[in-house]
Image 1 (cartoon, rainbow, N blue to C red):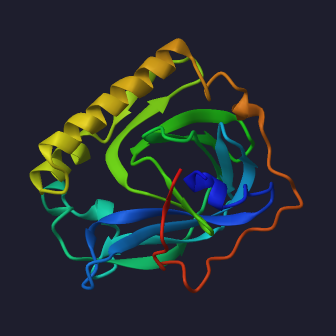
Image 2 (tube, helix red, strand yellow; image 1 turned 30 degrees about the vertical axis):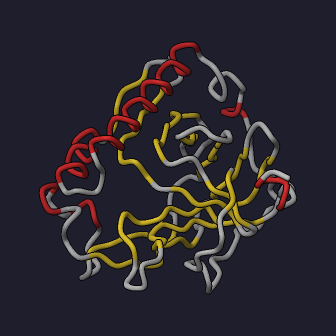
Image 3 (tube, rainbow, N blue to C red; image 1 turned 120 degrees about the vertical axis):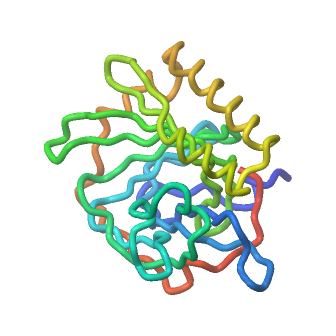
Length: 226
């Protein structure tokens, strides 16, 4: 029995949590969840997990201890200033997230409010681990934007460098993340999946309701391999 066999596949319309662990542990020594986004399952197969984060979804995000948004903190102290988490809502257009098992990135699709497609966003991250209520990962700071004309560019290279200086990422791990980014660029250049799969034409089922953020959103379950 493999890890994924222990849980049934989710069905279209199911609500799960897409979470990211923090880069430090809580006082008990456990992993801490500092990003949690309730999403609706679009497709869950051996090849891909696709989920929809609807506009207005209540999420959890990290902020500075005084409630200031993280990105308002100067880069030099962004990862060393005390933090907490807060509930907030996802405003603007929704996001379709695609994750292929074992890949150290997920691909997000963005549209404007009139459903004109804007771009793909390759979020470099730890391969996802699956549990009964959703998936967990860890963000790796470095990202890639990909545009309809197939051009692409690196994102957040300054944050990636600062995370290393702040001790949140070892040199060994940084090399692995760079290698993952290079592998993602190879997929982009070859216009492989999911870029060539037509997901930009997808639309959510109008009958879907926006999922709720559960009270136990931060509970840390036993994880299984994705």
